[in-house]
Image 1 (cartoon, rainbow, N blue to C red):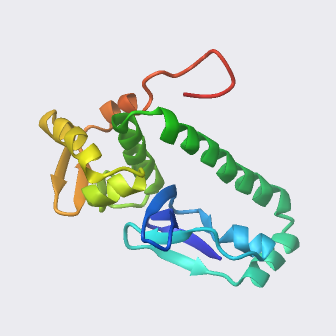
Image 2 (cartoon, rainbow, N blue to C red):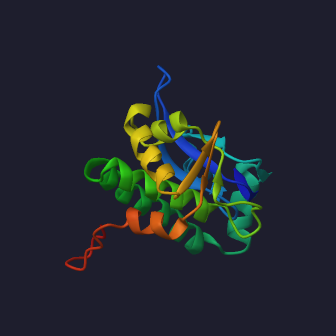
Image 3 (cartoon, rainbow, N blue to C red):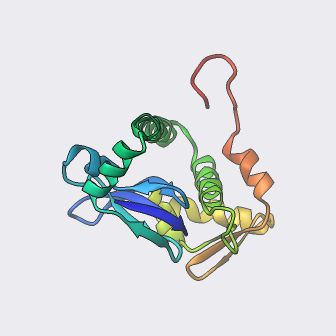
Length: 186
């Protein structure tokens, strides 16, 4: 079990053939590996650092002892359920959102996950290929979107990095049709 103290991590599901899809972005304050730590089953995903990361490693038994000692079971269950709810939103986005909206949402999620002490949260150390893979797309699907955003001054791109220059506009792109008609969000 890991407790992320600083930096950003991506949680991916990987296949034996090398294909992968992004499941989540994690940052300071997040617990990583708690599913396996709680149920004793093999891990269901792989965690990869996006930035330099500082994390505290805690053996499963020690983590469970601390949860019991400090009566954190209810809070941990709420945290785990929150992560599960995220996956439903993500699955919906995969099926129903355009590439631009999905990419904007990913970039905003990465910025938000950086935490308050990150020196440059709007700089994302992922290549165009990695961004496309994170969305389950080919690079050719994200390249025109990034080119359009670059021309509009929303982003700057360099080898293996992307800098978001206009966070507010990307936030608007990532939420194009906020629904007020039901309990489910966009």
